[in-house]
Length: 347
Image 1 (spheres, rainbow, N blue to C red):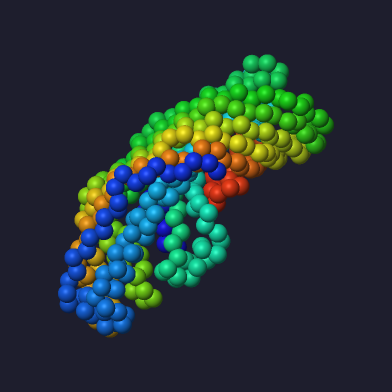
Image 2 (tube, one colour):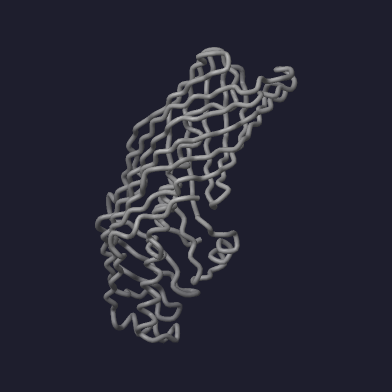
């Protein structure tokens, strides 16, 4: 599947900020290789140049930079989901834990678009943005029907040819609006809980070395690039969630939970890219071809959707004080998915 580079290496409100600068893709072709490609594809020199430059724009997420950055900001906000609140545990005093999250946003893309790209349709573009986080969490029961949570973590991380820094911090309150009912050892309904808070997370990725990426310019012809220069993606999210959740515990061991959420989102995503790339492909008859070079540049920023509605659901395995959970978040107005998982200990 064709997608943007940052997804490969990591991973219904506002609109994107107007572009600060239009993306630049400038190519300098090897005349001999260009002629061979022209003859193999039955195209003119201009058409070959346009084909390669269009693929470079698709490969680096430059087909629609404002949309890509809006999706990046949305994805970063989604990484806050599952880091800082426990929706499934019964505890008297404290709960502590660690969780990891990953999110991807493909905007208004539908499943047919993904299938078309997977089948090799080079005319269909699927912009996808992503984010990841890892966080520590502590929850404390203040009253019988009120819990407070805090979470946060800062850490550097190398991702192949990239170096990154990640951090998050948050605070939440959870109120038991309806009491639970049933047998805790057989079948227990956990009632209805209302949760809100404030969350912040940030992900910065920067090129640490030269790197390689590949796209497809025509059936049987793969465009290989080796690039060096400046490549930086910064994603910052401030989120205020409002959630209503419920849960059911069966035989004490398994808890299933779910609910609805409304997220008010702030922050932004910024891309700064200035690369020099070596271009090559392989002709089935002529063999490897040195196509030439390209310069790819953009400096732009985008904002997230201000309001997003979502559904959430998950499971938890209860092994005495140890809790192992997994959670899925899905935006109803966007093709955005977030996954979370981790372990907790109740005291």
